[in-house]
Image (tube, rainbow, N blue to C red; front, top):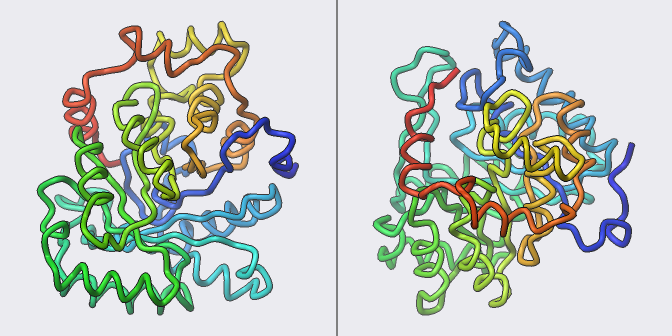
Length: 320
């Protein structure tokens, strides 16, 4: 089953495949055990990632997202590309720097990621990305930029990012936390901003960044939505009864509703699927624009949570 051509999707954003849950043994996605089983060895996770990349390719998905901190996601993607050298030209690859994976491939690691937005970190991780992918990604983002990040004021770092942008790589940011809009607006309005891509968390439980994403899109930025199913909360494995009722009233599954609501946003260019199985990816591909404005309904009801509470709950989730 291939993704319908854009003309047949009524202007819905494209679907991309995100490798956050496929590149490392532990992550915060609900339902992970049922999807991946007990074998989280490097070889098993590599096989799973390659299989999902094959399924995504067969379904017509041509946007893939990774990051230095997603365990071996870049390495898995790079080895898959090496096995299919004719595919790179049809793909749009995005990766991120600014976090290092420090989990040691352990499920019970005390710390899984370490954040560092310094120029030294960029200079270390950019060559690592090139080596893992076998070449430059199309988009390279500062990972989880927040308003207090030193990246917004480090002129040496910003100059280096401008050099990357001049080389043809679309430089951008990803955002996290309750103040995503502030971080995005600050990055967008920097003098001679090197940035032109944003990846932000937007979903029916946390839609607060929407207006800032609209401003960025209007300014010509490329907008990618991550965590549209709220790390599994907006899937059958989650326990969001109000969202499930909204989906049932719309005649679709909760994950399809969540993905469809994100794809229907006029400012969205790509919505990432974090699917770990072919069935999950097919459910995401079956998404459509909700019959009613699900985002407006969510914002007007208790479905949309206070951003501070949402992000506090996300931070408290168990890695498994």
